[in-house]
Length: 158
Image 1 (cartoon, one colour):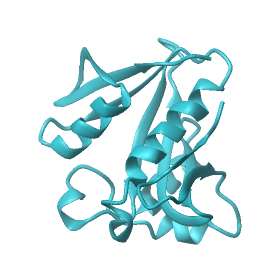
Image 2: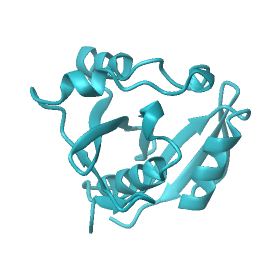
Image 3: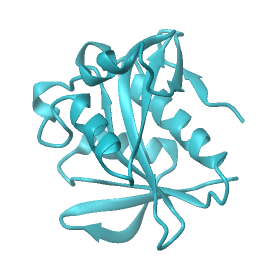
């Protein structure tokens, strides 16, 4: 099992715990302006959700040890699935394959957790770029909906 992959420029993309050394860089991660209707405007929002509640967990996304993104995940005790609640790739890092490599790393990471069965996420139907990414990584429509969002799932090998 690996929790790191390469982007299209050859950098190793991996997940890291949030630390005293990297939390500010993670908080400053920001998507492009046109993505802000689909994800938080800054990684800080997801960090606060992880810190102030007992549901979400945050991880830094690194490319060759530089913070380039953030991902938030949780475990659903009702159905035993793991959820990706938010993922942001910093605007200057987009278009390099970081998002795909990070998503593969998250699937690997969640697969290694005890009782892992499936990873799920929900996305807005107008977010066609994200939809294409999720499909290439193996996510499939579950038929479920969260408000207006489409819920997709990826089976895990744990």
